[in-house]
Image 1: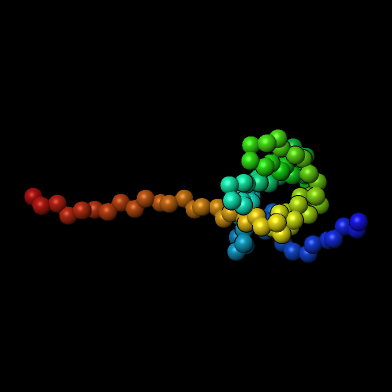
Image 2: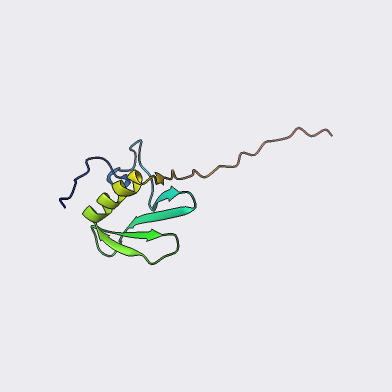
Length: 96
């Protein structure tokens, strides 16, 4: 069976400052299941993939890209990173 090359962006292709930039790790979620993809810091060009709390798998860049697109086709959604809320302090008027 031939490999179908998927054109299209993956989150790790975006750079800081791009509108679609998301920080690592990238989390794909479907129902209660989630899959985490992150770069292998010790072996450049490779990625780790982990489903829920199962064992992490090491993937090449091409395998990670193909897996990402397949997961999207299977109905997984890429989670957007939540921005940290900054606390705003309000000054209440006090009567003396």
